Length: 438
Image 1 (cartoon, one colour):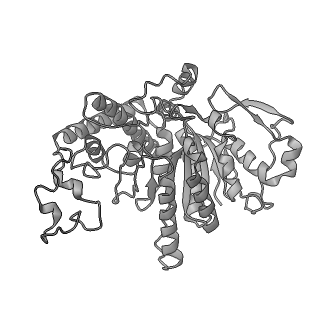
Image 2 (tube, rainbow, N blue to C red; image 1 turned 135 degrees about the vertical axis):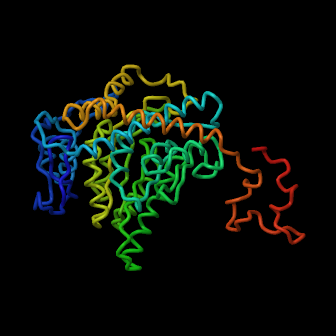
Image 3 (cartoon, rainbow, N blue to C red; image 1 turned 90 degrees about the vertical axis):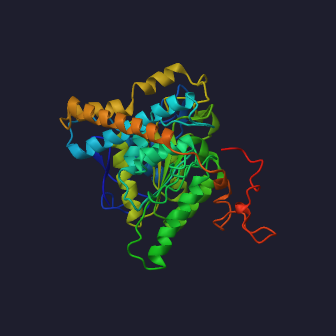
């Protein structure tokens, strides 16, 4: 197995309790001596609320299954003061920076266009969470799959969907990736392996599980050795109390499907604090319950996310099964652009704003001589031009014809079939009378 590391110090790969690895033949990670005995009171993530750690050192030593996963989580977050060998090359660092800046700039432009009346319905922005999308998706192959949520614009961009196609979809134009019929919450691109954004929470997890099963079936039943696709399922903390989440974790572990479940825990399910809604707020602990590794990682640090993603994707692709990764992240805006964002504590918001993942990566690149200010400004200027071009293209693109409303409803590509007169109903000029004028 490969190694998983933080931004600076390599650490052993995660082991399923009882399963030997090259690093730990006994199939476990060592107990962390820094965990205090008794009840350890500690803040959960960036929230002001606190949770209790129920395990004692003695209990950890006697419970291999619990201690192995607990130790893995602690190691991922370990302090990293030592001077390391760099984990990325200059080219990789610039690629990560460009993708994250594209996501942030695109979303900022979406806010402007929404308030100018160019977009309609609910628009959920990804500002602050870019390290998760970039850290995972930029490690994927073109043939791999991604299932997103209603906060899907940046996942689409990271997977390679052109900014023009995403912006046009948001504008409801025919040049959008779904010809204007999907809008903000339903990005889809077969060409790029983006299996959709989903308006309802949890919808994408079964779809992602099905995509992973498809890969497994092709490889093991149809004997297609080229079938090695990995599927990434993104979803939020609020989804993790829904039934689809547990059912699909069980199915994926049972069949060792090539999938990674990525929880983008931004601490808030609309206006409900995660720690108030979940009896065990550490979501990564739900992985071992189904026999798969569970990892918590700092989702505001793209390099830490990337190292965890490498391990999880490698496991999936090599046939070792699924991984549950909880990324602690934070959205810098309200739940949607219609949300005044008055419920979250200003201190909490300021704490995460000070840990902006783009600012952190920029600092890392400069301090480690992987790039200079000029290099990064060239990228920023390039992204500004891409986003401006996307807006101009979307604004100039045509609206869908009214007859397009009848397409993609039934398997018949002409929509609603044949009428009493033997003609296709969609060819009757009066058939769409009364429908909303697009």
